[in-house]
Length: 112
Length: 109
Image 1 (cartoon, helix red, strand yellow):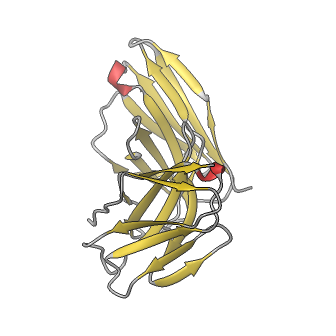
Image 2 (cartoon, rainbow over the protein chains, first blue to last red):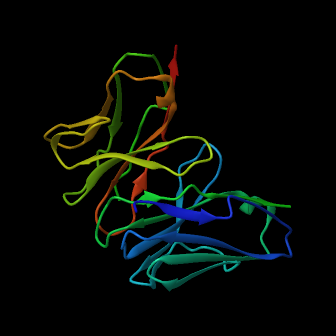
């Protein structure tokens, strides 16, 4: 299985809502990532988990809260988002120490 | 951290070979060069990766000169389905890959 899956594909939420994005991989990768991508821009790294521990937080606002329940799952909890947070949210995974990351299809988020 | 520079856009025709060059003047000794392809509203897809000289796989070739300050992605005999954004990245195993702005490649019939 060489796939990273993400749910939901699309999400519309109000600024007072709480929602979660989910990511799953079964490649045995021990590093998992969250990226945010705005239109016509490259992906921007948000968080990195290594062996289920948060290793990098790129100064992301606290309204985004990552969670890694186990080595296959990665969640991104969303609360009190702003309209400018609307974007494509991408999950990726890699073998520990590898430069090659495998991406999921993304969740298209719209904040109203 | 190395920064990459790529052309913003390129056009070509079906059946042609397309070469996209990326410059990375400040590449570090441990950095690898990786190229990804991205279609609209999809996640990036790994194409090829190399450290020096030439790497070839079933979809592309990657040429890296001895000084490693640039690299060229070569797509042989492109088709309409190769229309996408192509990203050049440099990075080491420290998780933080540096993404270029991407090259929008448009293939015409």
